Image (tube, rainbow, N blue to C red; front, side):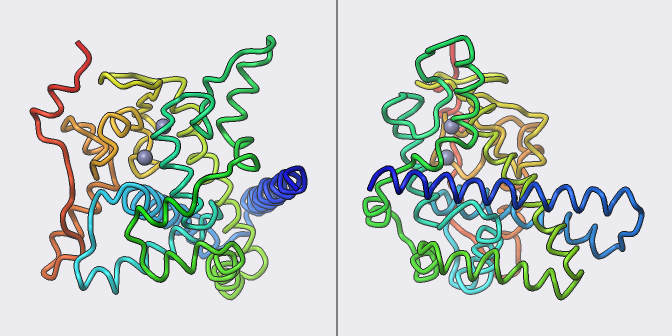
Length: 297
Ligand SMILES: [Zn+2]
Ligand SMILES: [Zn+2]
């Protein structure tokens, strides 16, 4: 049973990898042939931005960490919009994503607890590359998160529950969006959508691999997380991953002034709070004293 589960997991990962890569290649050839129209470029950029905000604001800061709340109005406007942006990312059903991520924080780079640490015991000279690949994407077919415990511990709404079923997730997220892109740009519209999926998948997966190997550290934490500031704006702020591990409950990943400017996810939350009728509330951030206490001496 376990082997069948694993084979099925690798099959799904293979379809995702090859499908998104095919989209990237077709969109790339289309781009170089100068046959593209502006709507194709708009599909790529619009989808990329939508997915990055959906992943960082919904999957990560809201679903996994409950770092902010929606107001009554936000619950019926911004929340479904962000849920849809997260669903089109092809990063998996909602509770599955959240449960894996909670286990990542709780396991904190311990090979037997963290589902995707790159710090596993070395077995041979290729271990470093193999561990990188494991943390990047090979962990996915092996992941067995405690979804039930996650669902019990989090305040999920009806849409979160529904989008936690793989088939419904695929239908409402990727399939519906691909159909919309077909209506906008034909078959090539779908290729440009999957090119954006390819880019955002590797950016998100890179937080788990590169974000635990290379970059700067500032706080005392019990794992190997790193900040890669140069990639932070592209990922909605996600690559300030070490800052995030220091304060996992915080809705803000940047703590110094210049870091906040590299955290589009937090800036977006501030923007949504400024609306005449605010869409978000209870945005949790650490106090300067909490930051000071956590600094590595
Ligand atoms: Zn991490
Ligand atoms: Zn997190």
